[in-house]
Image (cartoon, rainbow, N blue to C red; front, side, top):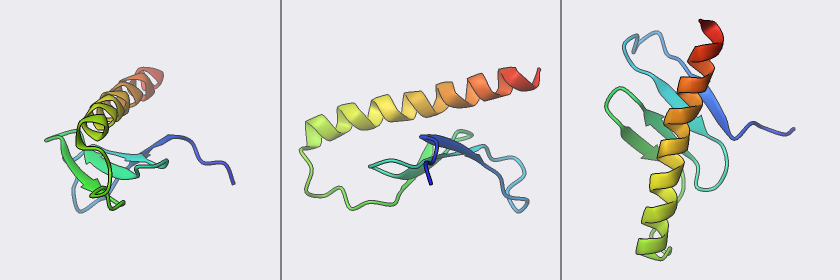
Length: 74
């Protein structure tokens, strides 16, 4: 199965939260309400500066993905 790069996630126990799941390496779940990130990968062996740049870009992409998805509902 080919998964999309980003998925919207929802949970009735957290009705105020907005979750976006990144399905490619490095996999993570971000709560756009407070930018809290849960990583599903061990990133301790990665180059810190390179990793920081990649992660910043991916988090920005997650926010853009959410904004584009919400435009489709308007």
